[in-house]
Amino acid sequence: MLFLLAVIMTVNAQDHVLKRLENSPRHMEWVNLKVESRNLETFLVYPEISKKVPGVILIHENRGLNDWARSAADQVAEVGYIVMAPDMLSGKAPDVGKTSDFENTDLARTAIYNLDPEEITLNLDAVFHNLKELPACNGTIVVMGFCWGGSQTFRYLTNNPELAAGFVFYGTAPKDKSVLKQI
Image 1 (cartoon, rainbow, N blue to C red):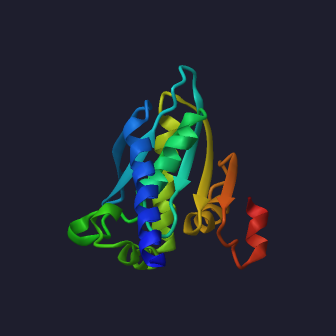
Image 2 (image 1 turned 90 degrees about the horizontal axis):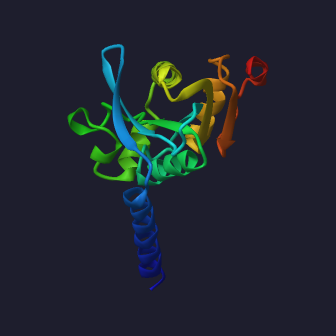
C-alpha cells in the first residue's frame, strides 16, 4: 500500500512538472552547441522581458537534464533571467542520445559519474560563451546547480573567473579548499 502511494505521488509530481512546461508562456528551445567534435544539447528559456538581462547556466542533478530540471530552468526564466541548461549526457546515451534516451534514471546516474571533468568544463565554457553572446543577454553570467550540478557549480566557479556568481543547491565543495580562493 505504501509503495502504491509513493508511485501515485511520483506520477502526480511528474504530471505537475509536465503541465508547467506545456503551459509556460516563455519561449523555450533546444540549442545544439558544438564542443570540439561533439554535440551538446542545451535547453534554452527566455524570460518575458524586453530589456537585456543576465544569463544563468543551470546544471542538472545526477539524473540528467530531465523534465524537473527543465521546469527549474523555466522557473528561473519566469523571474527574469535567460537560462541555458546543458544536457551533460549529450552523446552518452544509446545511439549517441541524451538524458531522455536512457532506459531509466539509474543508467543516467551511472553515466553522469563516468563523465570526464575536463569535458564537463569544455561543455560549460561553450554554454557560457553562447549565453554571453545572445543579443538578449547583458553579459552578466551566473551558474547554479542542484546535487551533482551543485558540485559542478563549485568546480566551474574555480575554472571560470568571468562568472559573476554561483548558487549551489546542495552539492559537495572541492576537497582541496585552497582552490576556493580562485572564486
